[in-house]
Image 1 (cartoon, rainbow, N blue to C red):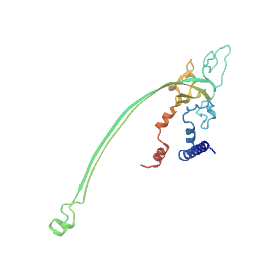
Image 2: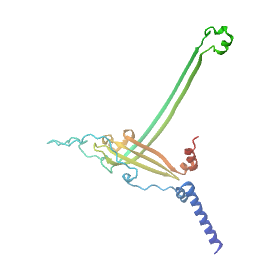
Image 3: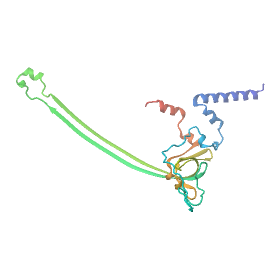
Image 4: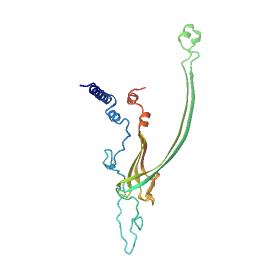
Length: 253
C-alpha cells in the first residue's frame, strides 16, 4: 500500500470521527451543516400548505347560509357582488397579493410612588405604686408595647418601541369558509449570497376587502400571522451556541 493511499484512508477516518463527534455533541443536524460548508443554502421546495404537519383547518363561528333567490326579468342576483365576473381571488387555489405595511410605534412611561409611616406607643407609668418599690421597678416594664413601622416604594417603567416593515407577498387561498371569507397563506424566500430571508403571511380576509387589482392590505387581515426572519451564516453568528442555550435553560441563576 502506497503512502498516498494510507494518508487518504487516515483522512477519511478523521473526517468520519469528526462527524460522529459532532453528531454526539451538537446533534445530527451538525452533519448537514458540515456537509454544506462553502455551499449556498438551498431554497425550500414549493409544496401544498395544507399537507404540512402543523396545518389545521380554520374553524370560526359561521352564520346560517343564505339561499340565493332569482328575480324574474332581473340581471341582479341576491348575494352577488357585481354584474360581471372579476379576476379577484374567490376560491381555493386562487392567488392574491398581500401588501404588508406595518408601522408601529409605542412610547409609554409610568411612575408610582408610595410612602407610609406608622407609630404605636403604649405604656404604664406607675402600676399600683411600682415607682415607690425599688424591686418592683426593676421587674415591671415601663412600656408594655412600642412599635414603629415605615414603608416606602418607588417604581418606574418605560417602553419605547418602533417597528416598520413594508413589502409585498403573494398568498394562496387555502380554504373558503361557509360565510365566504377566505383563508390565505403566503411564504416568500429570498436568498442573498449566503443568507435567506423568509416572509410568512397568513390569516382570514373578506372578499369585499380585496381591491380591483387583486391586492389587500395587511391591516384588513383577521387573525393575521406575519413572520419575518432569516437563516444562514449571519443568523448562525447572531445565535448563541447550543451549549450556551442549554446552560441558560438549566441554570437557575
